Length: 147
Image (cartoon, rainbow, N blue to C red; front, side):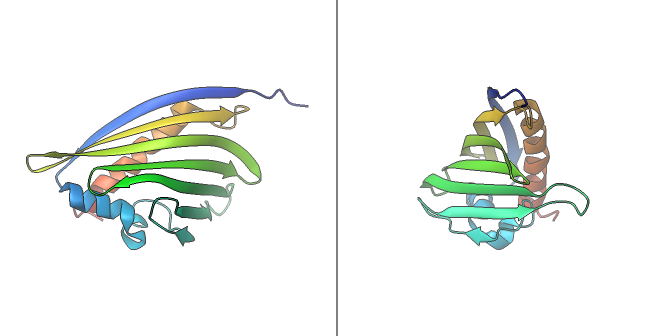
């Protein structure tokens, strides 16, 4: 049997976008807009207690399943959700994520904080933070009109 362990980690990623908080929030709240920078959801119910679910991956790679529940939504200000991430039939992490949107002159400051439990070496906070940086760059292109 393989050794079982949990690695806990917290990371924070910040971005400033040349788009209003309303536009950035809408990029999270609308499934068509979100599909431009994140995976296309199979289930999308953007409300407190609502679920977002997507499953997919590259043709030769593993299937990743994202399964989230929205815990708090403050329009144009804050999104909080908990989620699991599976690779195939292996649970690789459970996380809580907080997205804060702060209005700036001519744009929005986004603060993304993730606190996670990463299981058995299948994923790490460092790998997740790297992927989050890529994801938030794509969000920026979407809200600033480049996608």
